[in-house]
Length: 288
Image (cartoon, rainbow, N blue to C red; front, side, top):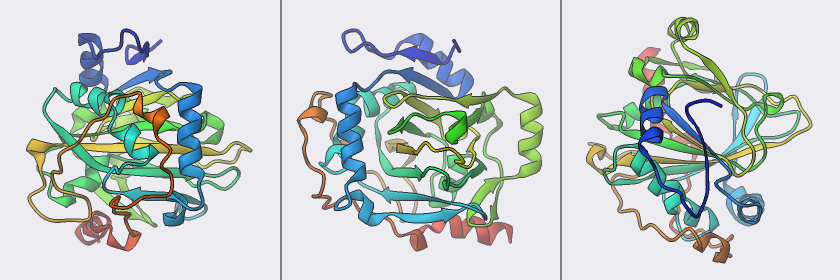
């Protein structure tokens, strides 16, 4: 077991010194079994609804295949919003980031469908968010599988400790921004390359400068993932952009997830149109 891997027990869960040290050393913490089977099914029902989140899906090509995604800026009061605002997600992320107040930066549903899902280039999330007026990489994401994520269906891959490299220049390649390939290749020689295989219900908490990628899905297995991104209040962007500036996060009790039945009332979530992705445009303008 990796020194970044932990197991969730609802009776005793808290972020301890070992978890914080692992996050700071490796750039990520993997926690197994954070959602029960009933909670996983609740999330799955919400993201699969054709009358809810699916209405806002769009494609992003890797030059060969497309993955689908939905992106929204405020958590809302639906099932996905309740999960994003829970102590298991937001509270854990806040403690791993040092305990300073955080807010919801955006959420997204990433969909690699069976035999068709596209790849994502090696990148850092801060490689995008830098262009949004965020001065510091005091930002992070929580990766929550809706389906099992395995090598065969395009699980996440990371370079352990790569967050310590700082922000790498990102270049537009096809319809994606990717980290400078030469720098990535050198990093792969120096750092451990990990395929982060996860079961539905596990959660991965990772730093915004951690280099990560994922392959195409050539398998018969769907690979959908719910991702919640957070920013520190103290890192409030200095300019208006397509993701929200500081908005207080109203946490709810973990038990509220199973009580929530809101799937279609998505008022106030502020879904993003891909043409509004100014970080992508900024990167394109900078390097081309």
